[in-house]
Image (cartoon, rainbow, N blue to C red; front, side, top):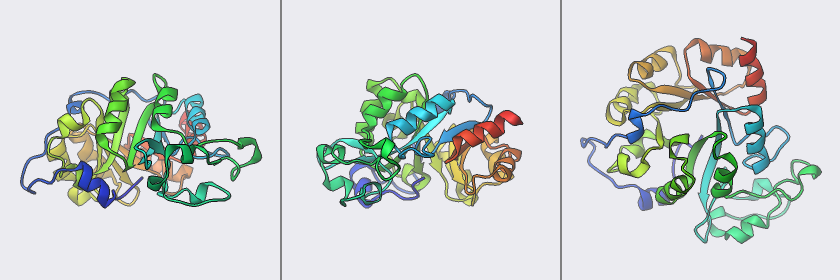
Amino acid sequence: MNKCLTGALLLVFLVTVGASQLVGQNVASKKNLRKPHFKTYVIAHRGAHAGIPENSLPAYQKAIDLGCDFVEIDARLTKDGKIVSIHNATIDQYVKKGSGEVKKMTLAEIKALDIGLKTGPEWKGTQIPTVEEILQLCQGKIGIYLDLKDAPIDSLMALLRKYKMGEEVVWYIPASYLFSIENVDSTFGSSFIMPDPGSEKKLDEVLAKLNPRVVATDMGALSKTFVEKCHANGAKVFVDEKEGTEAEWQQILEWGTDGIQTDHPEELIRFLNAR
């Protein structure tokens, strides 16, 4: 989960308004999220990537095969204006040889990279996917948890409309930046904003101003009262696991949390099925 957006993204895509000005509420505030398969939403962080290159089409396909509810994708813009899914700002971690910033590389240069070999020889030739390729794969099969790293919101919305997937998408964006968007309603349409308040202290303001159907947080801010406040305002809670253990999952569920973003979706599903 990205805790801050780049300054460039702010300058290009966000419109600053006075702190006291009310923020337009999301159209999706009147709609319901897709129903979970296991009563608790299972969100595959960067896809189901155990032994599979993360953020790759095979990792997203594995999440679909497992029956996950959402796959998390990280959206970044290339030099020539294409949007790809890669977590880091550079490609260094994903290839055996080579380095460079995603935003300074063309799509052709990105597609020439082999991100499979570092995982294993059986994944040789695996590429960094475009967001459009991911939507083509996931359409009608699984929801999208979209972590906006460094990409234009309007271009992403155009893709969601093209594949009629607006209502299948939740957007992770820090609440402070959503407060700066002049019209949340027209910006995000029928997709779901998923603000992260950063702490429980800011939760009341987030719920009052944005009226979200889902709120994002991590284990550092999650608590029973956090979840209760959200539920009282008609919002579900998605949390990032920290340890990824059964003991942690049990605590998350005891607090009434609605969804877990996990690096271990297969194990989490097994745990949920055994309850």
